[in-house]
Length: 368
Image (cartoon, rainbow, N blue to C red; front, side, top):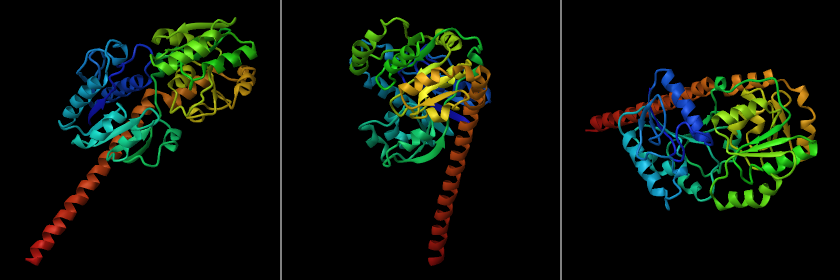
């Protein structure tokens, strides 16, 4: 297949540290190229890929603090992508999110939009007249979509990682880990509370996005807790450091207080043989095998109790669960199946259109 992949302009492909969507795009593109598909990737100029790279801007927008308005750069990126989409592709796969949706009709090839994030605020309006296909990264992410979303649902495809790139270790050190974006909805303060109550040392690592909400949360809520005994703050962890942290931790704590669409860190930790203890929110019940690769809990008290049951879990079982469900080949297989269903549906629609036109022409001829 001839496939065009549209990546966001916010991070490089692959991202050096934080960047869940960009990490998934990289894994998908490399897998498709390895299967012999002809792939073009629209991304930042600093991206590294086995596919053909098309770029309008060299650096990720997240690092461009001097830009007062980043929307013009996103629109130029989108314009180049849509121009490329007119060049005979079988499928255009949109990972840019809602910004590309209103322009889907400009693509001569069918567009598949993966909803990596929840649909917030006024962006719902952009989806109301969408005519393309879309998929979600979990069943729960589909369930919480507004009923006004347009387009054809193509099913859910779980995100994935290259499991072999994550080091497995059954020997753990005496700490638990919180590793994620630092934000109120990720609730690292609750992870610290649970660890403190259980008498566990906790390592906290994550990126603080430069926005008022997250910066205030870090300053007013989290920073005072990071000075407590038994709490270690590392800041943002790059690809190498996060693997080391996962592999040595007794557990990853995720007290999420929102409808997390997927949660790539859960798959990454399990790949390292590290169980995940998460609140029963969002996609966590789909990602974690409760009692096998971690525990699903409802509150801090439940998290404290689960920390006392870690010896009942097997590092090997965690790794196996990640391999069987969230390894790269699983996601690539599933997306190829979605592409094939889309092409079959488009061919059927085209055949029906041609048949209707021929019937009309035949009727007009007989009438004459």
